[in-house]
Length: 576
Ligand SMILES: Cc1cc2nc3c(=O)[nH]c(=O)nc-3n(C[C@H](O)[C@H](O)[C@H](O)COP(=O)(O)OP(=O)(O)OC[C@H]3O[C@@H](n4cnc5c(N)ncnc54)[C@H](O)[C@@H]3O)c2cc1C
Image (tube, rainbow, N blue to C red):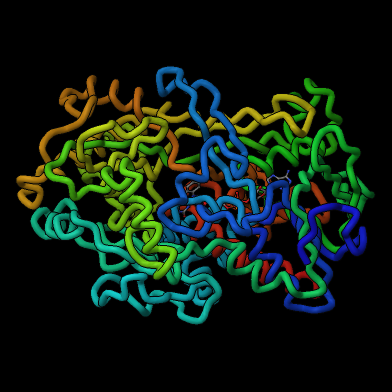
């Protein structure tokens, strides 16, 4: 059942306590309660997603963040690689976590990503050939909202049709779609067509797959949690922010943390609940390292400075933060076929909303992009003379191109006139690493989020080349008469001017990982073992995006779902 107040909880001791009803947390809530004898409690700091229209209507997703009650409302520390700028770094704070507020692009990454994780951790279970089996459990491909023929737009054999989460191809055609596909033919050597980025082979540009079904968002809450919430052995409590895990004893020489403290705000005394089998942190790439540090698991010097007693000295906690960098390249375009008009004109918008309300079709039934793709720098790129190739392998990418049929510039309002197209060039294989550190021992004070964007020679080189490549894409004959001119700083041509434009414009793609990295059992650094148990600790696992040791070739919800399905198997099999 879903509870709103701790006094409603049926008990204070459970087999498993899951911290965070987010993307990964709800997968575990579902899988662990398939056994009716297993008692599970999920603690979620945020609110319910029930009745939140923007969490249902796909096109409205971007209105849920930043700066709302559904967002943790983090701000990055001043970024030295970005002219000292700060900006919001949204994270979902509601049932479903980021899967309830994200932009619904749904893919799993390159096979090379998972093979690299298997190699780094020495655990073959993480290799693509094993992990991809979870796609069939997880995914349910459904027809797009407009019912169009999807032949040639994806490879059905790569996908599941009997899983839990509805996924579909674009549900409303966009005026520019045909030009994008024509460009993949015209400039096929640089921008080849990709038939399907969901099967481990990401290179090329093709049709986006989205966590959308029947014209509505598929979140972990509307799928995994909705499926399980009626089970008598599952309790989910919202408005419950976990403030720390407390040590309850020592097992095999390791401290065990089976007590979980939570509270609705800093003025209320915490409630304490206990896990008989395991405590599972699924609080996301910022929440999980924050809770570990508040619990005395982290860098001793940092913890001591805040008067937190160190129980496990592990300097890797909160380090190795890695994220994709978003760089919007905006073009002025001809005519009125872009979606800018819809966004400015309240009458047009209410017609579209009415169409969605009555039929679950039209522009609002779709996500915000229809086409995207993953690309490599040329083999002979000059940077490789001095820097090793950081991609996951020769079939993985360095950057991503995302085509948006409107003015898409995070933090900057659409101009009051004009039509636009945005080609986002995103850095997919960054080498910069940042951190999440406590600003205070008060759990209600936000941690310091420092992604450390564009602070290496590779990163600035790759994003500069990606900006240039985006301009080549837009100069194909396929865009003749439509793309008029670069907008703003995109007119830069010299390397120095492009770098200046990038440093003034780039921000986050919202894909943080790595802050509780998974490494080999005997590795000198890392936070969790390949079975996701916290190193040096008994009774605690981490199951969320923070365990990925590097950011994969995908928008990160898909890899996180596969990780959570795999984690459920590991947990269930280890406790039999
Ligand atoms: C604006 C935005 C757009 C995005 N777009 C896409 C996209 O199009 N496609 C894609 O694949 N990915 C996208 N992502 C990223 C993707 O959604 C995330 O990487 C992924 O969902 C993370 O899953 P998670 O389980 O690690 O964390 P989350 O889903 O964030 O779950 C963590 C949960 O824990 C809760 N929590 C945190 N701290 C505590 C605490 N102390 N106590 C209790 N509960 C706590 C949170 O409220 C949250 O519900 C986007 C993200 C954002 C924010």
